[in-house]
Image (cartoon, rainbow, N blue to C red; front, side, top):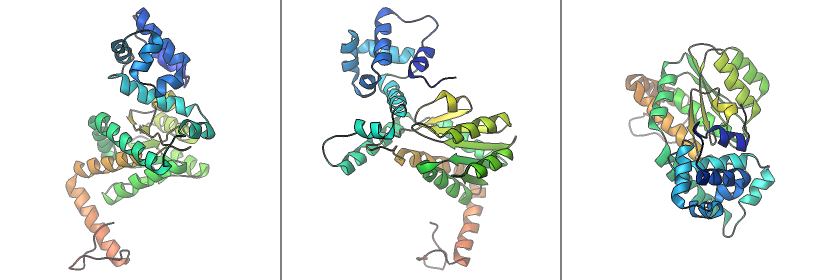
Length: 292
């Protein structure tokens, strides 16, 4: 198990090997990761002395639909090898940073929409629905994604909790995990070691493990039954959480569809509690509050 950029690529090479032109492209990917991460297929082809079709073919030989899919993971892995100041330097550019950030998020959502595997989303949702309980592990800024997913899943009627900080809380929670439970690990960029450790420990204890991440690092992927690939590149020194939150919302929508009667009953109960506790500023006509 390794996160080495070169070893990751070489491990994906078919047993039959590569033809000379394809091998030339692979050498560029390995020796010039930055150019490969940000350049076009045409630029990469020119560097390797091949045509664009060869670039597409090697992407497919490595297990991807085409060059854009391969480049997405190449770039995520390249950025994960950089420090925060280095990431910020990579994303420096002209124009308004806020405008560039919005454009990046729009591009990421479009990419997510094209490539998200709905079958994987259904698998995760059905696992959560069938679980005794679900634990979401998400640290740092990624906690926002984990907390949103856990909050809405509970309203939908399922026992889901997010552990977002504190090694003692995480270790105590994982110690109680076993068969019949689900753990969802959420981490991007360089990954939190505690999240990776929790995923492996939960898998060893018999729980089903799923991951939301931007690069299928062997450290996390080896513990996960399924990995949901989420574009997380930002324009500053930190990853964007926009696509991650979109996936969390998609998971909850799918979860609510697993057992509509259960979810409807849970929402009605939540509505009554919101009224009893006076949580909401605005209430619809008839006295029944609209859910947050």
